[in-house]
Image (cartoon, rainbow, N blue to C red):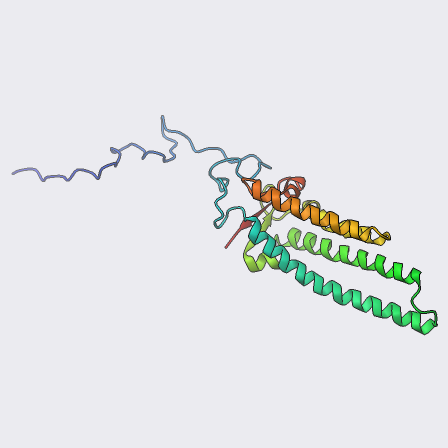
Length: 221
């Protein structure tokens, strides 16, 4: 009786007992998988383990455009709340001035400006610090499926979230007469610098991310 004919294996199939090219193996003479990135390593420092080059896909660093849209959504939401609180404050002070019969004095005008600057700074800075440290996401990031992560993964700490958003607190300069415009211009300059550094970074990390120790914003959906 003749032996059954065996079909040859498909082209490129390794012989039995050998590992396919490029596959990780712990067998004798085979390369071991690369070690995981050390704690605090910047995103993109180690291929594998989710630390490969940025491609813009799910699980990869988010581009500046979608991050700008998320920040715009958050700015509109916080701005509405800030406008309501400021309006109530101004109406209250005007009512108090009318009741005393003195009208709105220069001192009251400075007081309104200072309180408005303090409230605005507290709202914006507090919003981003609390949301990012507690959830890793603001409302804008939730809608656009982005997430802020700390240098070692997970949510940023309160300190890290504060550092990466501290530039939004430059409006506090408004408590000093004539410095409100300076604060606004500094905020604008910081925002432009962040956009430029995100766009030119292979890991999409802005200067504020590096200042916070290596935080990053990922696309999660």
